[in-house]
Amino acid sequence: MMPREKLAKYGTATLTDLELLLLVIGSGNKQVSARVTATQILKLLKEKGSEVTYRDLVGVKGMGVAKTSEMIALFELGRRYLIPADEPVIASTDDAVEQLKDLRSRRQECFAVLTLDGANRLISNEIIFQGTLDRSIVHPREIFARAIEDRAASIIVAHNHPSGNPRPSEEDIAVTKRIQEAGELLGIKVLEHIIVTKSDQWSI
Image (tube, rainbow, N blue to C red; front, side, top):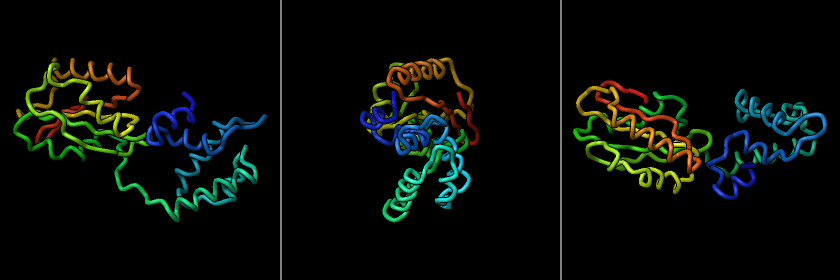
C-alpha cells in the first residue's frame, strides 16, 4: 500500500518516518528516486534532529530550492505550533519491560498490550485480561480492538508469571502464534510476546 493510501485509510500513526518523508517529497526525478532522497534526509534528521538547516537539505541529491524551502517551512511550523510527543520510543525488549513494571508484582496472571505507532512510539499500555492464560480467554478480537482504535502500526503483548519462572509454557507459545496470525491478517505487526516475573523476563 502506498503511503498516501495508507495515510487516508489508517492515519498518520501507522506511517514510518520514511513514508512520511516520501509524502512531503512527492516524486523523484531522472537522476534519483524519491526513496533515495527520503533515506538521505532521514539520515540527516537522525544525526542533527531539529538542527537540520536549509544548506543541509539543499545539498541532498533530488532536493531543489522549492522542495527544500517547503520542507524547512514545515519543520519551522512544527517547532512553533506542534507539541512534541511525551511518550517513549520502544526500541528494544528492555524498553518494553520498563513499561511493564505494574505486571511484575501482580499475584494473578495478567495480559497487557502495548500499542505503538509507525516510529515505535508508545501509544497506550493496557491490561486487558486477568486470570490463567489460555487460548479460550485470550481472544485476538480483544487484543486488536485497542490496536485498531489507536491506529497502531504494531503491538507488543505481555503477561506475568507469578510463580517466578519466566520460561514460556506450551500454552504461552500457542497463544503467541495465534496472536501473530491474527496480526498478519489485520496488517498489525506483533513484535514480541514478553513474559515477566518479579525479577526476570523472557521474550518469545
